[in-house]
Image 1 (cartoon, rainbow, N blue to C red):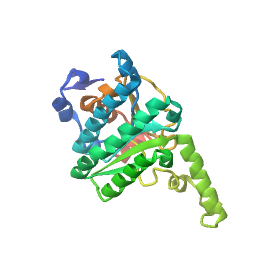
Image 2 (cartoon, helix red, strand yellow):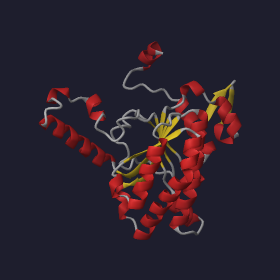
Image 3 (spheres, rainbow, N blue to C red):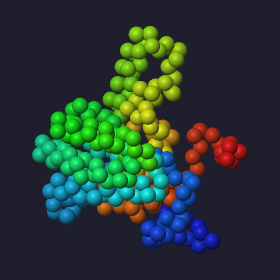
Image 4 (cartoon, one colour):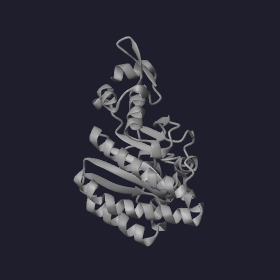
Length: 266
């Protein structure tokens, strides 16, 4: 990305992390960032390593990005850690991913507490191995009163399944007389989603060069700004996140309105 600063073209990619932070408008940060962490397997293949090595290296990126978001003031970070479709992968890889998840929760609980970060999950977490479920529940319980940032991890998650489950929930409540058909609107529907307690993402990042949504937050990203980077997830660190945020800050979000309406609203 190239921007004009004092009549000079600046290639943001050439700037240091400190210089990027100086350019950032702290009053115009995305409240909620969602990330599709893609490219672990390709990263490992390029280096002649097994796919599992890419997943392990990707954990370092998770730590870096969570810390950076907390430091700059992002309020919610949602990361797509394991999709409903990922259960179809080789058993060895799935088992390794579950092991890495459990290790992450065990090691990062103190960091989450020290940084006042609340841990949440979305998805069909009842399908996770029991030992992983126990750690998910333990960390969610331990951090439930933390309020500086939310780290929301999508586990065994699928956007279509989430929407179907929301429809089932509404249908059940209509049958029981808790909700009238005339009450159903977009606001009510959102309260039946996994993300009912969270704002919709302002910015969604996908790494590795793929330009798909991959069944991620299909309802919630209706007006989300999308950012695609060729950087593989294990290489995606603070500098890359800051570039994505600065790109976001140079966009105009219209929400269906025209430019003149946006100007009057501001």
